[in-house]
Structure formats: structure tokens, C-alpha cells
Amino acid sequence: MSGPQCTRLSGALVKQVLDSVDSVLFDCDGVIWRGDQAVPGAPRVVTLLKERGKRVFFVTNNSTKTRKMYVDKMSTLGFDAKEEEVFGTAYCSAMYLKTVCELQGKVYLVGSDAMRQELEAVGIRQTGVGPDHVAGKQNDWANVALDPDVKAVVVGFDEHFSYMKVNRAMQYLTQPECLFVGTNRDSRLPLEGGKAVPGTGCLLQAVETAAQRQAQTVGKPNRFMFDCVASKFSVDPARCLMVGDRLDTDIMLGSNCGLKTLLTLTGVSTVADAEAHQKSGCAERQKMVPDYYVESIADLLPALQG
Amino acid sequence: MSGPQCTRLSGALVKQVLDSVDSVLFDCDGVIWRGDQAVPGAPRVVTLLKERGKRVFFVTNNSTKTRKMYVDKMSTLGFDAKEEEVFGTAYCSAMYLKTVCELQGKVYLVGSDAMRQELEAVGIRQTGVGPDHVAGKQNDWANVALDPDVKAVVVGFDEHFSYMKVNRAMQYLTQPECLFVGTNRDSRLPLEGGKAVPGTGCLLQAVETAAQRQAQTVGKPNRFMFDCVASKFSVDPARCLMVGDRLDTDIMLGSNCGLKTLLTLTGVSTVADAEAHQKSGCAERQKMVPDYYVESIADLLPALQG
Image 1 (cartoon, rainbow over the protein chains, first blue to last red):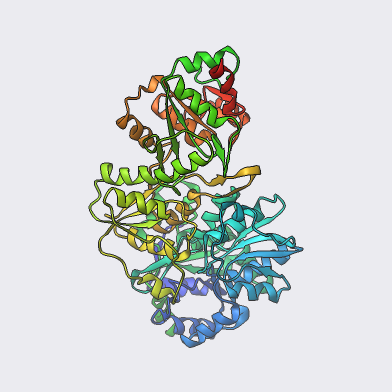
Image 2: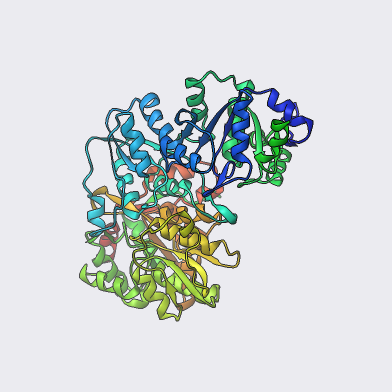
């Protein structure tokens, strides 16, 4: 009845928890790496989990890479990973548009080339990737040429985000039947050394404010990403551990799907954040309290090596 | 006790209301013009009000023009207006930074050249106007060079809005002592023919989401713009009429300052919107119910010509 307690995972408890699960879902940024550096010990943790017969999956809201690009990065950083184990929002958004929305038509894409590739891999055409600088005057912006085949606006991370992209997305979304999908709402992308840059949530907020509509988001904490994993592999939620650094995305996803949850302190959220949610008395906030926490996923190593 | 009633202003009531005021504050976009076209009859209304001894002021959240640029546009459209009668957010933001914030230091400006001019006119230096396209990788963005003299981030309308501007603003705002000011929160800029383009509110939302901070806004419904007028001219709020097309900015400003309020239906809000606020039973929403409404400010003409 008391809900999750955010217990420190150490000593004999580590083996006990690992024995209770068959699958482990890892968030990436802030969990197994920060920016371009692996979290020390993280590659070994993944390898040993697999050697112990666990299924390992990588579930990330970051939309800047295809599954293949993720595997390449992982390989460079020393991780053992296969394409089918990687669930990023570039891939999952394409799956969402194809399987849930059954989209017939083109996408206006505020996003990366990786998103373009994942859309095209499932047969969805798109327009919009790359710079779109402003030209002309207000009346030209309001009357900007729209592609009549576009039936959905998709917003992911886009380093070429611009006023004209907000405007173009808004003009498409004025059509009530135009779908509106965002990859995720993360406000910041954490990097090494406590630095960060603006995340997709900032871009999505701008488009939502202009369109006066809310996007459906694919990424965590929406359960679609877990459903993606579960539909391809036989995953029993009760025997699955979600490992993440963010309470509002990773831990909330775990709670939404009935998974065990583990917070690692190498990224965004703190134990104090979790305790504040626990003490709030609010059921929705208590979904962001993890079952366990570790300083780093390297804390799992002794139990795995033993 | 019943609050404002949103009564149609016509017949003998027009003269009665006009006789009860000495000053009239007009919003611009959607009230006296739409895009580059004057609302028919509006220039004549302004002229006749002045001939009847009323003080007339123009109070606009639009930050793309200096006072001088407004007077030039007004002159082209047939309006009789002087610089000191115009209160736009480019000018008022400069006044706000100088008089309320007493800013010592430079501004990082997400905004227009007009805002740069108004800041410089009161002796405030700025950086940031013009295109700022993305270059390099995430780590370069997080370590972008910051001007140590910058002590405030100001966000207004900026057609060159870009990911790098959100990022630069966020990096400045990570410093807790850096001030954060927005010109206004209007989500859309209405144009002729029911068209619109994204407004400053979209850009501000993006920066606020990245910075995880709320900006102080200068524009309506914040009472600073009325205080700007009242501090320069002797204006009795009880004998002042605020005329606008938006309930959430214009009418709310009027309510916040104890002015009489008149909604005109040539812009954003409708009588149905006002009635929904009236029926809500919510005190905050009832502040957005105008005392009166007209189809167009040209409806004031018969009483003024009589």
C-alpha cells in the first residue's frame, strides 16, 4: 500500500533484484553514457547481464539517431548491442505513425536526418529536414506553400529549428485532420560535466503554442515504447527492470507499464527529487518514485561478477 | 456585484460612454488595422476623438516596430498619431529594463532591430539581433561563447528565431542572477483574411522550457504598459477606455487597471468567448469580460459625427 520506496540498491539486494527479472531496459543519455563518454563500467554491466541470460534493451527518447547509428555509437563506446535491441524515438515514431496512426500521406518533419531515414524505412515520405530560413514578410509567411500530401506534423529534435519551421507546422496544423506527433517532451539534453542543451520539449512547446493544439508524444513516459519492445519480444512486465536517470520519463514509464524501476544518479534526477514526489501525497507524482536507486549502474558489477 | 456584462455598444449608449471618458487606449493589430490594411473608418474615429478633446494612445504588444516606425505606418494608413502617443513593447521593454530593473549591463536580445534601436535609445547595449545558425556539435553548443557583460535575456518577436538562440538564451539564464524579460505572450499574430503567423508567445515558451524559468513579461495584460502611459500623461483610470480585440491581453489589462473596456470583433476574440468567461463563475476569467463590445470601432462614428 505504501508504494515504491526508493531503496538504495546495494549488497545482497542487488543479486535478489537481478534474479527477479529476465529483461532489463536501459535509458541511454545519463545512464549508460553522457554525451560521448560511456559511464565507467556500463559496457561491462551490459555484457555480464547478457552472459547471465538477461535480455537487454535500450530505450531512449533521443530522436537524433537511427537504430544503426546507435549500434555504431555503442560499439565505439565498448557496448555489445544489436539493432533490434535499440528503441529510439526516431524508430518508434515511424512505427507509431505506421501502426497506430496508419498514416496515409506525407509527414512535415521538424527533425533530424535520422528521423527521415527511419520514416522512409517504413515507407513514409516526408518533407522539411534541413535549414528553413525566413524570407519575405508576414503575409508571405502566412501564405507559405503547403504540400497537399502532408497529413501529419512530426516534431523531434532539430538543430535547424527556426521561426519558419514553427510557422510551417502551424499552417499545416490549422487543418483539423492533420495529425500532430512529438517524439518526446524532454526539456534538456544533458551532456558531460553538468552541461546541457535545449531538448525537443522546447521545440514542441513552441509549435504547440502556435498551433493551439497538443501533440501526441511517442517517447517515455508514454507506454508505446514499452509496447514496441513487448510486441517484438516476449517480455513479462513483472519480470522486467527499467533503468533510467529521469523520474518524469524513465521511472514514470516503468510505473505506467508495471515494471520494476531503478534510478541511477549519473544523469538528471536526484534522490531528493524522488523523496519530494514520495512525500507529496499525490498519486500521479508517486508514480515517479523508483523502487531502487544506485549512484551508477556500475554498482551492479559486484553482484554480476560474483 | 454582477461584474461586466459585455453589452453591445450602440445607439445613445455610445455617446454616454464617450462622454464618461477623457482618454482612449487603442490596441493596434485587429483593432485599428489588420496586417497592412486600416480597419475601415478607424482613422476617422481617431481624428474625431481628438477633435472632441479626447486623449488617444496606442498600446500594442507587437515588438517589431519603434515608436517612430509606428507613426510612419499610421501616417501611411491615414491615422493622426504622434510618437509620444505610441506605446509598443519594443519601447516599453526598454523603459522596463531601465526604470524597473535598473539594468546595469548588456542584454542578450532575441528580437528585432526595432527592439535594438529602442534599447540603444535609452542607453542599453545589446547583442543577438539577426540570424544565428547552428554550427558544430552538441558540446560546442553547450560551450558557446557567452558575453560576460550580459545581465539580462530579453525575448520579443524574432523572425530569425533559431535553435542556437534558444541555446544561447538558456546558457545565459543558467546564471541565476541573469534577468529574464519577455515582451508578451501572444501566441499568434493575426493578419488579414483570418490568417495568422506564430507570435512571441511561441518563442518565449521555447526559451522558458529550456531555461526552466519563467520570464517577467512587459506587455498586456501586465499593468506596466498602462503605468507607462499614466506616468507620462495625467490619466484618470476611471475616465479611460481600453479598446482591444483580445480578452486575455487587452480586456484583462483594462480590468487590472480599473479602466472601462470595449471589445471590438475585428480581431481575435468573440462575444461567445466573453460569455464563456462570464458564465465560468471564476473571478480570474471574469476579468476578461469587457463592459461593452462593437462589431468594429467604426460603430463609434455616428455618435462622433452627430
